[in-house]
Length: 285
Ligand code: PMM
Image (cartoon, rainbow, N blue to C red; front, side, top):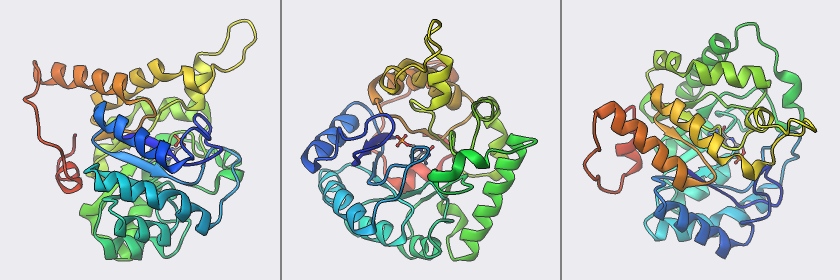
């Protein structure tokens, strides 16, 4: 899954793809480089971020979703708002990726149920502005999986079919660096939920701090974390992740192909362009 943030303020690529034409070109490039899915978002969720209005979010994402879907790209819409999710699906999006897992907008689960498209339910404890204060766990792996199971129950009660759900540990969201490492080390435990697992380590703070300058202690800048991202993505794939969400696709796509070839003891046959339904039908991409 390649990322197109149509935002001025995302933590690692803020402002680069705010212009709709550039965002579409970026999405097409990511698809060409091996992304099966292009995730389009119009609201930054970096720690401390404040929210944009619904109108602004719609204005940013809809033309990009429409153009990419029109070019045959499988688009997911990264939004916490039901109205944005519905409008994006109408414009051609085939997956709804909600970092709040249905918790930020009480209408989201019903909206996704109406559309029938796959739904990413990410672990979430609160809005970005205050989430760093919510990273309080005694057993982070068990608690995060348990909370996602409850989020799943809530969206299923609102009408989402369990087969629509994709789960995500939400690395960096109400998590300390230690929590992120503990989660990345224990992804195989997520098979207990019986749903495809999406993992988004790309350029996140725990990688920046790992790669900090030894003299100054300053975290490695976000755009210089892509090799670490590819490594984290391979480790996620090796533990059964269904998809990994990244800013730079080519190197990670190559790296996860190596992991898949190792698992199969050889390269896989070339496969046709995937559909959202086919992608979520199996546990692995
Ligand atoms: N992280 C970000 C945004 N969207 N979606 C999912 N499913 N999982 C994530 O961890 C996630 C996400 C953080 O911002 P970015 O777009 O700059 O990576």
